Structures are given as structure tokens and as C-alpha cells.
Amino acid sequence: MDRRSFLATTMSTGILAGSGAAAATAAVAKTEVSGLTKANIPTPALVVDLDAFEANVKKMADHCREAKCGFRPHAKTHKCPEIARQQIAAGALGICVATVPEAEAMAAAGIGGILLTSPIVDAGKVGRMIELIKSGGHVMLAVGHEREASLLAEAADAANVEVELLIDLDVGDKRTGSLPGAPAIELAQKIARSNRLHIRGVQAYAGHASHTVGFEARQRVSREAMGKAVETKRLLQKAGFDAKILSGGSTGTYNIDSAIDGVTELQVGSYVFMDVDYRRIGGRDGNPVYSDFQPSLTVLATVVNATHADRITVDAGTKAIDTTTAHVPPVKDRPGLRYAKFGDEFGAVTAEDGAKLPALGERIEFMVPHCDPNVNLYERIFACRGDKVEAIWPIAARREFGSTVR
Ligand SMILES: Cc1ncc(COP(=O)(O)O)c(C=O)c1O
Image (tube, rainbow, N blue to C red; front, side):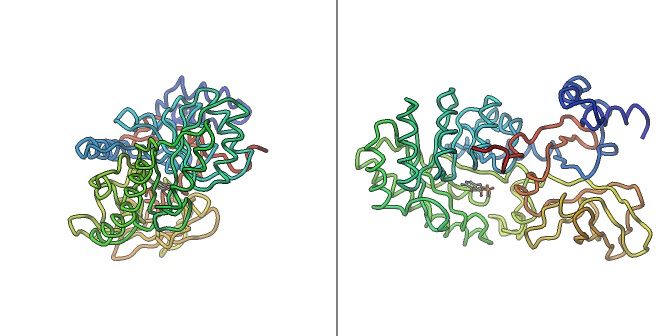
């Protein structure tokens, strides 16, 4: 690496010890990543291929526009306000979040139309959501149990704020939410006792549908699940509630759910990056590879040992590539190379079918087995056009667990 590249690397990524976080941040703005390429980013690094990423953002936006269905993409995938901004610029209604710190990070970055899709059942987190609303954040919550509702009502009363919410429905994956139909209407009636809480519709995420392999099977499962949500929304309206929204769906079911009458917005997440897990669910065209969206996310690694003829070692172990699924991360554009876990810091790569092993110091990229937890391992994403780094996007909501005492 020449001196200019080295300085660009160290300044842009804030790795000059002692220069301070503020100085490093200013350096990012000033140098605008000039001189940075995939050859001189410190590895392991999380990289997004901008051509593939932008095509994904556009394809989902175009699909929703044509299907006349809204979309509020899930930021649990990327935790990155810059990506949220681009999704909204493409036409999204706002952004879904899975945690209170994600909501706070998005609101702090000026993102509006936030929907917290997970239940919160403790007063501390409820208080933070109420503070967010009070400070002007445009936020909705999904509520699936009367305990959640009474905590919210109490905090909303104390703070004098109005809270908009969706009834969270368990449409078959047994994860969160009220059972659909009569139990959901009963919950809505209890919620209506508070004049601070305003029901705007329902949320129905069908996790059991999103990764069903085979388009027809997936369609069957998703239609059955979303049918329960459509019916519950109808019952709510019949009972006099202003329930206009039905928010749900996923990357795997976007082209199924957007065609269901009554679904008003999709909560698609993974489509921006894709991953090995999603690629195997199969497409509408019968292709076993689900290729509606392009894999755009990779982990860039360096070969740090090439002593042995039959294998090399790379600097990307379980701290750099999420290996909690059974899938092996494929090496991008290098068929015949095979990754294996080799501890916390390292991975092993072997060659099959006459493929050539990379040399010491060479860089290779791995497709990620599961995008959401992989993003959560990093502080920033290097956004690249070809080999050139165009931007560095902070994963602003990444440091969250244990980051506050409330
Ligand atoms: C509530 C909720 N909505 C939407 C999604 C987005 O799903 P996907 O990444 O499959 O598009 C998820 C993902 O787990 C989710 O939990």
C-alpha cells in the first residue's frame, strides 16, 4: 500500500490511534473516502456492492408501485439510516424497526414513519418510545397484548402524548401478537379504553411463510396467514375502529402478499442485501435459486497464511461471518473454493475441481449466510462501486444490547 492510500485508509476508517473519534469522523467527511479501494480497506470488512444494492432498492420500489401496495422496509436487516434514507427516497412509507435503539437511531437521523414491530413489555423501554414520540418522532408501535397496551397507556397519559398503534397478530408462527379474529377484537376494545391510544390497523408477519421452499407452497402458506389478518382488519372496521393499515410480508412473499386485497404495506427487509439462506427458497419461475434480488453484501477478507498446498487461512472467522445457519459462505466469483470455520478470528479455504487457491495477501469476498446477524457484527458498511469505495455508512443502531441502563 502506498503512503497516500495508507493515509486515506487510516483517516477514513478512524484507525489512527489517539486521533479521537471526532477527528476520525471529520476525516471521513473531508476525504470522502478518496483513494480507498477494496485493496486497502482494513479487513475483515463488510462491503456492499452498490450496483446490486441499488438495483434491489429500485426493483422492490417498482414492484410495489405497480402492485399499488405500500412498503415500509424493515431496518432490522441493515440498522443503517443511510439505507433507510435511500429506501424512503425510492418510495417507502417509512421504516420498520425491531428494537427501541433502532427506533432511536432512525429518529435521530431524521427518518420518519417508524413502526416498531416487536412487543415491549417493560416500563423502561415503553418510556423511551414515549419520549421519542414526545420529541417529535413519527412513530407507531405494534401491540399484541393488554399488558403492552396498559404500560403504553400509562406512560402516554403521564407524558400527555398520543400514540398510534397496530394490533400485532399471530397469524401462524407463534412468535408474537394476539391471536387473530375475536381475541384481537377483544384486545382492541381494551385498548380503546385509553383515549391516548389510537388503533390504525393490524400487523401480521408470517415468519413461517417467508422461507418456505418452493413458490407454490410459499404462496399457500402466506395466503392462509394473511387471510387471517385481512379478516381481522375487516372485523375491526366493522366494530368501528379506524383500521386502515395491514402491514406485513417479507422478501420471500413480497410478490404474493402485495397481490392480496387488504394488505396495504410490505415489511420487506432482506431484499436489499439477500443472503445464502434466502437464495435457496426458489423463485416464481420454478428456478431453485431465488434470484428476484441480487446478493449485494459480502465480507471482504485477506489471505493471512498460505503455507500449505491444500488450504489457506483468511482473517474472517466467526467474529466476521455469521455462521449460525447451516449454510457455508460461498466465495464470490471464485467457484471451487470452499470456506470452513476455523475459529473466532480465522477461516480456512480449500480448493475443489481444480480451482486455484489465492496467494498470501490476496483478498477474497464471501457471500453471507444470513444478512441480519452478519450486519450486526460490524460498525460500518463500505459501499463500493466495483473496487472503489464510494461511501462508508455507519451501522448506527448496531451497538445496542447493554448500551443503556434503561
Ligand atoms: C416483523 C418482521 N417483519 C418483516 C421482516 C422482514 O423479513 P425479510 O427479511 O424476510 O424480508 C421480519 C424479519 O424477520 C420481521 O421480523
